[in-house]
Length: 322
Image (tube, rainbow, N blue to C red):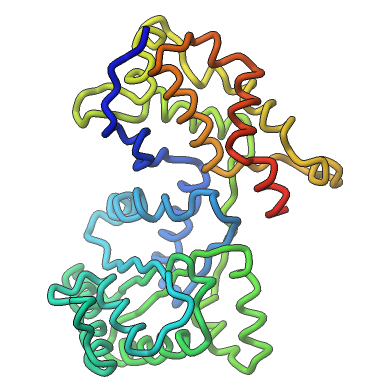
């Protein structure tokens, strides 16, 4: 029987996140870097694995729970491929939520830099500490001159007793930045901003996939404070009968394995690493089909899982990033 589905549901809007083991590992590592007081570190991995969603939905709350205080954190998504120094500081000023920031009336270079520095000082002091963190998403787009500008800012803050840490998150190419900087006569920048690194992985095991599926089954909710999980919303009758996505774990994993490109399967020691985006797309398809009235047994048939995974472009994506 077709259910009455509200188009505002996060699944239909694709405005949600499911917590994953790779997200948990990344956030814990950033927490460790904060504990160590490092000046900079970088996290790299293929696109569509869940790095940006971890930052958007979970990073601040989990770290504030860990440190039991407000986190002096600025998150900046580096979107433009080329920036003047004025544009650079104004973009950071906007990311820092400066009260009087107006993208239509940007500040001069000197003013924007001064105000951004003051905003960082305010954040650090409001958190009753001497540490402030800038996290740059899509950091593989950063240029050498931009790193030099941040180096000058870090030196200025250091003179005022504030430790300034820059965490960079980006694609695989980010891991080659330290060597590039060193070879082009800028090893001091690499030493400052690339002191530590870690790779962000996809979903690498059946147990990790089961953890994600349980998120849809039990660790999700909409509407707020309703106690209704995502699976329960779209398949209330099947849910009441005890049907759970986590019980489809083996079938879904096997279907992803089957659709790996032959070139990856042929590699010695090759193993499956699923981008979170493709898992999301598959489960969203399944939930929409439940919501339209399709039977649980029809949607969770092995061949249906294969069909839905194929529609996500998984095989082609894996071929491109391998």
